[in-house]
Amino acid sequence: MSTIHVFVDYKSVESYLAFGDILRLRDDVGCALVWHPFLAKLTEFGYCDVHDNVVTVHLREHYRKKNPYLYRVAKDTASKRSPVLPLRGPTCLLNTTPLLCGLIFVISVSDETHQPSVVVSYHQQAFAAIWDPANQRDVQSPEVVASLVSAALRDATFADVFITFFRGEGLQALRSCLDSAEAEFGVFEAPSFVLEGVNTKNTALFPARGELFSARPSLSLLRHRLGPGTQSIPMRPTGKEQRGPKSIDVYVDLKSPYAYLSIQPTLQLRRDFDVTLNWLPFTLDIQSFLGSAEVGARDNIVKAGTNRRSERQWRQVKYAYADVRRRGALRDPPLQVYGTRKVWDSSLAGLAMLWAKDRGEDALDRYQSEVWPLFWRRELDIEDTSLMVAVLARVGVETQGFASWASGEGRRRLDAINNHARKLGVFGVPTFVVHDDAFLWGGEHLEEIRVRLSEQGYARPIHSSL
Image 1 (cartoon, rainbow, N blue to C red):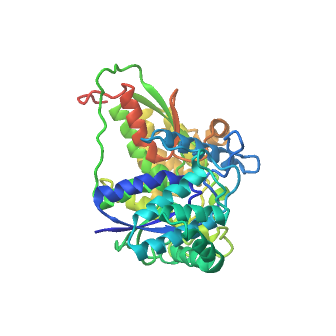
Image 2: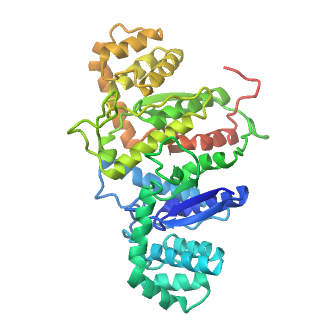
C-alpha cells in the first residue's frame, strides 16, 4: 500500500478545497494518509473585508491582480462541489498555530487509541471554523481550539489536556514538525503531498522521503502516479448545435516553463473544437515575486552578487522546474526542460511572435514549434536580435524590416498588449480569456475549457480535420 504524507494549513483555501479530493484519492486507490501540519505565511489571497472582497490596497501590482483572482476561482470551485462547500474568506490575517497544535495533539491521541477517523473529524471542524460562515470562530484562541479538539475526540476532558499541551510542549512539537517538513520532505507550501519511497533523481529537491507534489492541481499527477484514470470528454453532446467559432485569447511568455507545457494542449483545442486562438505575448515581471539570480551556463553555480532570492523563492523555482520536467517526460515525444540561466527579458521573443502572427497562422505555428524547444534546451539567447531573426528565417518567416519594426511600432504594440492585459487582470501565464465565458490562469484549466466548449456545442465532429 502506498503512503502519502499530506501537509495542510487550515488558513490555506487550497488545503480546504483539496481535503475532500485527497480523501477520495485514498478511497479510490487504497493508500494510507499521514497528516502533517504546515504553517503557511499567509492565506493564498490574503484576507477579505466585511463585504467578502479581497483587500488589496497594501499589495504590489502582481498581487493586486492575483489575489482577487485566486479567491474568485476558489469560490467558484467550492460552489461546484457536491455538496457545495461553504466558503467565505477570513477578515484578518490568521495565525493558525493553535489549530495546528490541535492537529498534532489529535494525531497523537488517534495513534494511541487507533481511531484514525478522529483526525478527519478534527480537519472538518478546523476548516469549518475558518471557511464556513455558519461555523466561523476565533481559531486564534487556544480555548476555541480546545473545544474543537474535544469535539473531534468526543471527550470533553481532552479540552484541558490540550490547553496544558499547547502551553507546554505544543509549540516545540509544531516547530519540530515544520523543520521536518522542510528538511525531510522539501515542503514549502500547503497543501503539499509526498508519495513516500518513490525513487527520484532530484534528491536536492526531494531530500529523503519521496516525491513531492505541491499545490492542489498536482493531485491529478499524483493520481496518475498511483494509477491513472482519466475521464473522457464528449466530442459533441446530444442536443447542442455548433455555432460560429469561439475566440480564445492565450497569453504566454517564453520564459515560463508552465506556458511551455501548455502550448501543445492549447493547439489541440483548435483541432478538436471550432475555436480561434489569439496568441498574445505577456512579459512577466518574475523578479517582483520570485526574485532573480544568474547561474553559470555549464556548472549551474550561482554567480557572485546575482542572488536576489530568498530560500523559499529558491524552493519554489527549483520545484517548478522539477515539476515541469516530470510532466514533460510524460509527453510523446518527451519535452526537454532545462532551468534558465537567468531571468530573461523575453520581450524580443514576444515581438517575434507578433511578427510571425502577422504573417499568418502557419507562420506563427512554425515559429512556436521552433522557439520554445530551443529556449528550454538552453540553445537560444532571446535577448539577441540577430539570433531571433535567425529563428524566424529558419522557419520560413520573412525577416526584412524586423529589427526596425521591433524597436518602433512593434514595441509600442507589445506595450499596448501588456497594458491591456493588466487592465483585464492578467498577472501570470498561461492565461486563457475565453470570450463571453471565462478568465482562467494556468494550464490545469485546459481540461475545464474543453468541458465548457464541449457543453456549448463547439466540438468538431470526430471525422473533422483542419
